[in-house]
Amino acid sequence: MQPCGTFNVDYARDMAILRTRTQWVLTIGGLVLLFTLPLYLSDHLLGMINMLGIMIVAVLGLMILTGYAGQINLGQAAFVTVGAYASALMTTRLGMPFWIAMPLAGLSTGLVGFIFGLPSLRVKGFYLAMTTLAAQFIIPTLIAHVRTDITGGGRGLTVPTPHLGDIVLNSQTAMFFVIVTVVVLLTFIAKSLVRGPIGRAFVAIRDNDLAAEAMGINVFRYKLLAFFVCSFYAGIAGSLYAHWMRFINYDILTIMDSIWYLGMMIIGGMGSITGAIVGPIFVYALDQGLTWGANQMGGTFATLPATLPAAIHVMVFGIVILLFLAFEPRGLNHRWEVFKAAYRLTPFSY
Amino acid sequence: MNILQFAVSGLLIGGVYALIALGIVLVFKATGVFNFAAGHIMALGAFLAYLLMVQVGVPIWAGIVIAVLVAALIGILVERLALRRLIGQAHMSALMATLALAYFLQGLMLAVWESKVLTLPKFLPTGSVTTGLVIDAELLWPFVIVMILFGAFAIFFARTKVGLGMRATAEDHQLAQLKGINVKFVFALTWALAAALSTIAGILLGHRLGVSIPLVFVGFKVIPVVLLGGLNSIAGAIVGGLIVGLVESFVAGFFNAWLASIAPFIVLLIVMLIRPEGIFGQKRIERV
Image 1 (cartoon, each protein chain N blue to C red):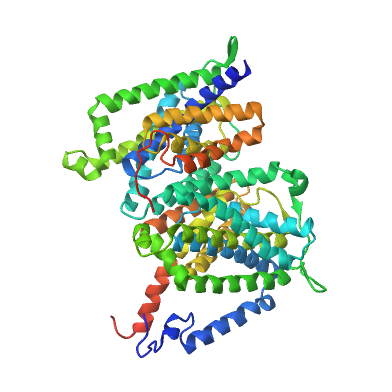
Image 2 (image 1 turned 60 degrees about the horizontal axis):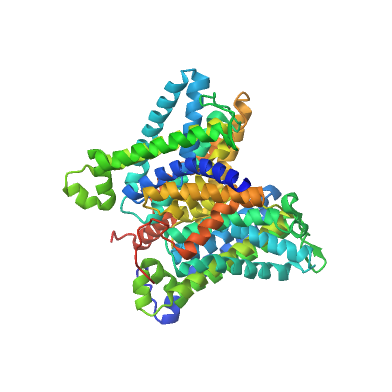
């Protein structure tokens, strides 16, 4: 919906991510604010933002696969683990710099995702989700038990600190710049991907695969491509995670994290890149708020069992997802669109 | 000799998988929802039994009966409060709702019983029967109970009016409604039955392994069972359960334990590639 008097006068402008001058100003202002955050925030908060950035990358990938191409992925956390290990092994065993290992980790995870996407030739929908669920259980177990001389097995793996020239990126602030740059870049790529022909093919497959096939879209190829892109994003997220935490283990992420990613995507709003950013922010803020609240409660009532805060936190997350599914299945992004339409039309009601 | 031994243990373990799988299949057939929370409902049932038997102190048989009834009630509540609202929405919403439910139940169990391993009072014979093969009595009796339950269900679906109504609903909601079957009632009943079955499975497993939150992972292990047998086949639940039990037992016996833990999922991948509809499943022909 366009505000009164604003028209897209040519095709390029219609397709543009940023259409008006106000949007340009806001975006540049937002980016400046984002990149100067370390000036105002403590290390603790920056650490949280870094974690959030990594989640956003993983959810962006999932959004393209599930939100746009409509293929449910219950194994995103496993793909993130693959990315973390790929990147860690390339830097520790092969001595590659982080900057080369990160894209390579993305590509190799993309290949793994590609393999788990292969059954989409024969099965779809729910059944396909099951193969990704299998990935979620098989991959971490294989990492823990196969060739433990390389992967470190159950003992985990220490990851070297990345460095840029002579600057060692060992602080939250330094990693903040790396992670946020990657997030901004990948958001832009995702946004460009979904507004172009590939994204439209994805949406066509999601809405009706038979019709998509009839329109001349090679469904299988685009499904595989969606799997590749999704796992590529997961791989980048894993690589960032490994070099940010500097220690990884085969069970850093479990099936529960995969469910979290799906939950974040639904809360953000399926089928929108904005949703892939808003969803993780909302869920992570809720998560941190609950942890804080639960700790406060634990401090006040010392007699309560120690597991109670964790338990409440898990329960509330489950309830929030249920409520979103029941009352706002189109997610926060939909609310935002409604709000935007409302203020653009003010003072007219329709 | 060894092979026979592994086969027997595998079959006996598979029986309990089949029971949980039956719960999932019932819900899927009737309502079209795949219940990811089956493992969590199962663990909750085992915890309920513990609560009644040990913490409240009712007699064991009463504990089992009440736990099953409470679980059935929870099943009805789940259907009424969460899933009925999602009828008509995308497939994925219902799936996510059961995952969210799983999350909620996990938190609930963690809040009430914490992360301990609790022991149920032994009400079935323990020890082992040795007749050439060593048969663990704690595996044998649950298996017998499971088989009796399956027999009862076969009669229920073939002979009783309610059972026939459930089958009709599974075929087609609208046609069933036209015939005067109360579809809402069937939905509620299905969830109640599925929760009750899961609870029995949970008590049987808890009897041998102790009651703790990691029991929920058995629920994920049952997914390959359901898909192997066929998502909408009750016979498939039994056969799938026994096959997965066998595979697990053989892999654990001849290879190692960690490979056994992922063997069901490797089976699942193979099924997806070769015969996605499962052994007895209904084949939907739609190629894209």
